[in-house]
Image (cartoon, rainbow over all chains, first blue to last red; front, side):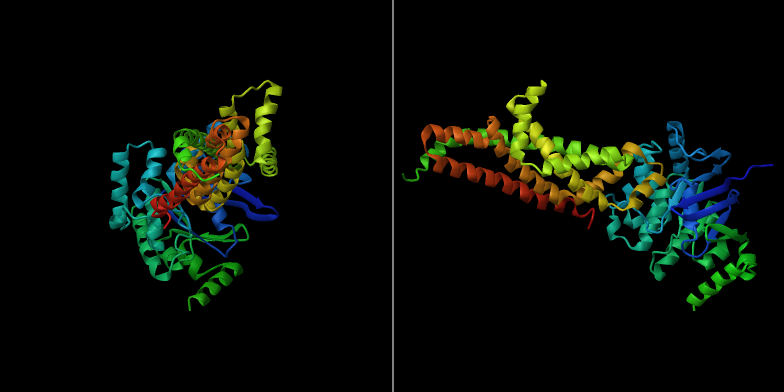
Length: 256
Length: 220
């Protein structure tokens, strides 16, 4: 049997007394777009952050293309730390708060990690950055400082910064939640292009419209557990559990 | 005794030589203190070791809780007891460095607190770690927000060097003492000294405005 592209196996994570993740397992195949939904505090962001070890899980394994990310013993050796950085360079991450670097202009934001991590020459890195900034529609903002960009532009810059590293997997943590409603569209259209290019993505989102249209699978989490998962149509139209029903009802109430 | 300006002109060349030494001590001491404080800040944040952080907290409260004059004497007169003999100039720089570092550590702590946690996370998520994480991403932001307090600290250092005259560092204050104890005209000589100190500090504190302007676009 062909191993899965990304395997998340029995992840547990506690913050103090709170079980943020309880035996969470998830398989992702190449090119799959998985949307993770659930009430706030249900552990969906934590799940995403354990994939690239930004939040190291207490127990469990994350396996990307057959290789274990981080360590399954809790302690990290020097060697494991180095390979973790290599994993992270291949896994793009986009944050709710953008986290673009304010002391660097747009071009430098996209160039920096290419030079530092990928060891590319400046010419090559700049060429690539310009091409990607063009793709996300920031062609005329190349010399701009992040503080002069709108939220939507910042988020597209953050996506460009990740894409410049040629990621094989993208993690998106509520990429549109901090945006004004009229700016959400421009970010979603960039994500739509990524989906069309066949990028494997894990997206924590509240955009059910986007999830149902472009997600291959929707995962519903509550209280640190995966309650239901399946194709968007089944999950959104005929929820099996009471909790998911309740959650969807609340969401549709707010969209009235 | 009337104010005779010719004594100022006579003293000026030697006073300016002294001012040069003052600048040397201040700049060297401050640079070393920034290097030391930056290093300590990185270690403090990266390892979060209770023993190390406790030691640094003790060091800072010790430096802040005692007069600089006493610290200078301690380094110049007490270190030789333990076999470490320093000439006045290096002893002066060491005293300035150790004293100023305590304050710079606190300044950088504030600057670092203004850098959101997400900045670290974004860098890490791209595979940037260790040296590059600090040097390329975190420290530039920390120092840009710390410009005003750092410039202020440098003016404090510049003025504090006057205390080094007590351990015979031949800086501006020491030179002026030498001159007026020979010609018995302290009023003229000290006035000139006063103005030279003021001019140096004035230029330094104005540079804050320039530096802030220079980096303003980066934080708008």
